[in-house]
Amino acid sequence: MTRMKMKIIKVNLYLFFVLFVISGSYAQTTINGSFFHDGIERTYRAYVPAMYNPTIAVPLLFNLHGFGSNNIEQEVYGDFRPIADTAGFIIVHPNGTLDAQNDRFWNTFGNSTVDDIGFLSALIDTMSADYNIDQDRVYSTGMSNGGFMSYELACGLSDRIAAIASVTGSMVYDHFNACNALHPTPVMEIHGTADGTVPYNGNVYIVPIETLVTYWAEFNNCSTVPVITQIPDIDQTDGCTAELHVYEAGDSGTKVELYKIIGGGHTWPGASFVIGITNMDFSASSEIWRFLKQYDLNGIIIGIDEETIQSPSFTIFPNPGHGNFTVEFADNSEKQITVTNFLGQVVMQFTCNSTKSDITLKNTGVYVIAVKTSDKTMTKRLIMN
Image 1 (cartoon, rainbow, N blue to C red):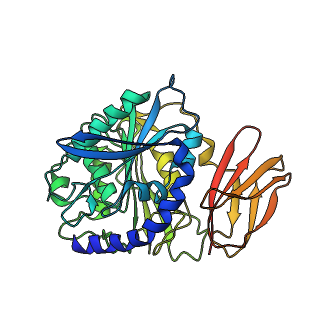
Image 2: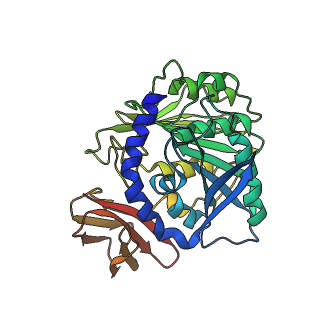
């Protein structure tokens, strides 16, 4: 685990100073909370979208940080907030506990007595006391150690967790062999074949990714041969490509999906911050929600509406770019375009009545482009190198 720790700390040194700042633009809808569990004070952040209506039960999504990271960094790096703003679910970003080296972690490697499963179960209760949570639609996702923890919840808290997704995570063999999920469990795994922290082919401690995916496909009685789709190589400068492997027709309509990132590293596809070999051909956050939202504790949800966030009607290219960008739209209806920087300051605002608009930016950084039409608002990240 030493190698994993060193790799992730390098990422965090970069993230800490930059991602902490950008998180401030969402402060007005973020709640910081804490409570004691097993004698330990546990902390979390909850993001509640403006459209939340307490008379309607909404899904709850755990978004779990990696080893040595924290909830603020994960909130921004694996960002679901723009999706929640459209889809209406609540996100909770818990903190793991601190080890002897003062690094935050989830108890997934068998070397701690911290009851993280009990804490996250209690956190569901805490969130449910304050908000109208749909108890059949509680999901978990996370990066690296947070992906490991999502599998722990699928195995050890399956009476409360409907489906999970993991980015660069896996399971250790002892916990894998002891897994005791109680219902067919939809699983998505997103993983790079060149991941040097959690190896795609596993090691003496970590289960290989394809072994892990095959286990869940068999557990759910899915088809044994996946349907493989090549993801369009939209960004040919990111150093990797992607395939989607789908194991279909499982019990209760479940599926297992694997995004295999050919040449990809220990990173979150589509993230605003490119650290190492990051696939930019799709958004991990959008695909995770597209997958999770189909299910509740009983399996596939029949007739669920598709949120507009999953089929955005505008594109930006090149992205990342060096200053000159083109935004293309699906139609020529009137649209209000707003560009904000990482501090939440509006740097550009205009109306567009065509299918294309050019944008020129002067300063490097991360921007958010919001497109408001008569019936919805959509957002995308734009990166200027």
